[in-house]
Length: 422
Image 1 (cartoon, rainbow, N blue to C red):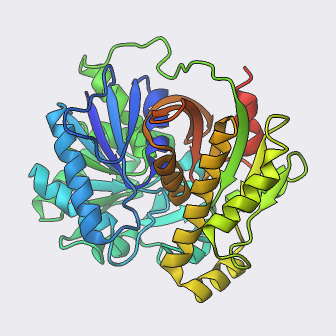
Image 2: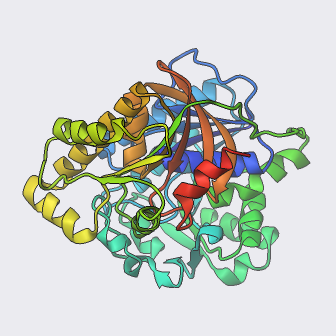
């Protein structure tokens, strides 16, 4: 194993896996902390997917350290802590506390932090994170139900979460290439900085950052910064050419979409798909009971499964999310929706569905947990950061596409199933 990664949610893990497969690495995603002795044979990279982004800080740290211990025992040469390209967190964490714990466990003293993913319009300039042409705190992320992002200055954001200090490698340095980036990070480490936020606005910048971090024990960031890592391993003679690292077998069965994300992108995708596929919308505010919500959705779907993909959505605009949170509390509202959607996914599989698109990071975590999935073999991308995967576990084999709420083109749901027809 060349790279061992720890991701703080399931769609983020899949996003990273997809980037590595694109770079020619055979990649496996494991669900939850692996068991001692659990194997991931013939993989160049293993990504351990946790549901730690919004977990209590101590739980997030403990699970991440357990995952690190397993990856160390499995022989990983380098480590990666993957979080969202919109730096989803709160002032309490969990990005800073988990990264602090990983740095301490590895004894490396320093790590870069770069969530940029220009292909999906996430860029970092002068330490500020942009989503498209908007600052992070004006992008819609300020309304996120669990991790509202109200400050675009990542130096400030990370400084509030860590016991260490945070520096910046600015655009003017990054634009000079890997040597300049490497020198700047070395200087920051020598001055006692624990982290360096690194600017990046193009893929070329990300490749240079990856090259500059060739000898780093730990890299932290979004999937974009992993773009340069396969080249490092290949240059060192550690990575051989693979004919098709993303090849997956064909799988028969019906198709469905289950959506829990309330992001602008997912809401737009649902708006588009209504003209093409049958859509059932859950009313969590009117029926705040996961069992009742599930029963209603599955009753609706039972007569439609098999003809064309069915779409079941718990997604809602900010005002409805706010009303549900006001009634139940933020945490309980999230648990309600995740439980309902996970029950629905389980019921769909019992009714013969074998190809499922899941929209939303927290939703994906709930769904794969309910379905008993323990590993994902990563296939080709549908849209940047979102591949089809072959999921295996305690039930039947499934094709799953775990989509971060903010990812994917407007026609993503249709495109996903067309990709399986080729």
